[in-house]
Length: 544
Image (cartoon, rainbow, N blue to C red):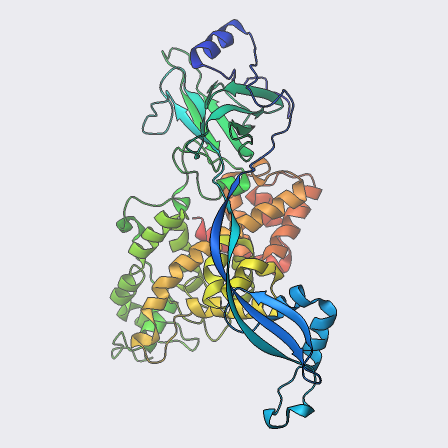
């Protein structure tokens, strides 16, 4: 990236010195001890060893026909050696023969047995060196001299971005911080590096940085994207600046949801209501005459429809006009019963609370069962394809959920994409069941505990869809999603992905890109193929 006309900054070093450099138009780079100019960082390389006592269990793999020992194994776990133990310790050929020939035998006439059997020889305690990784050096990003007003604009004249190195090892120190701003190198002595902030291009500027440690290695390489918007000073005594930082190392106000995945900056004037979370659960309250919800409440006996000649129901199971009127109070109460939970989940996962509420409204009208015997289940009407997206594109959720269903070692070593198809199907089925609150023996036919639990599941599902959406745009355009579409429209694309699937979204984005049109909601929604078109009204409903 070339340096923008209105420079971001930037002269690292002590702040006062940097200020003088900026005023004089003078650039200077001081290279820290440890790395020469242009040299690549080594990355973390730190560990220690501990002496521990280990109990080894000795086993002999012995042939039935002549009692000859063919392999001696020492394993650290109780029980006979595993398949992996035999393969690694006895070799592939003996392993194959052991698997093929070692069947259960009648010990009353063991002369008929073929293959091998195990003999336990006892235990031995040995000293062993265990390699322990040590924590890596870190570099944190913060903002100083900003004093933001109620809308987030800095009011002080010279806000600065600060990189701060942290060395977790007590006997070591940070010698310096180095990196790139756009294509320009920088380097600072010691654990701190300050930058003056001037206006950037709308997409911001990329900052790559790392710390140099006296341990002899460097921290991991970190990244940040920084956007600075300035007001026209005019008659103002102080020019205001609005500063956004997208980075895992950012210590300031949390980034807008999915902004890091997309490298997308939300508008400085704030987000629309549908992408916001109110100050308290009361802000989520609604009063909509939901005919499907009313029909379910009537069918479950929660509403008296004695005054309705039609029984309060239409042939499709939704409420008739008389049923809607009879169920109005129950419907108003039910559609708000999840508000506090939605509010809490929104604050925990940073998925906008109003977005969650709007999605549940459109998908299920807040009835958390199975919709008319279809395969869509729960408040957010999860499908098997949707469960696959959640497990594939939200790795942290996968790591939490998988051990509840499969062996923990399998979950940790393989990852969802590398599981056998049967294991993947088992996980998808378990996830669908976890959000399906239908329950024949429960009051109103709904397991409310499971319904409550599912709110967090759907929040994590939305996060998975935003990750996949970002990758789709990256694949089509060759650049981060935030450089092609606005933050609000990326959420609209995410809702298409959630509702209609990645194929529908990818096709529409490709058509829009191929015809040279801007990747905005109007153009992408118009490019949706006929079978995907319903997603357009779906998004419009949720984003109102």
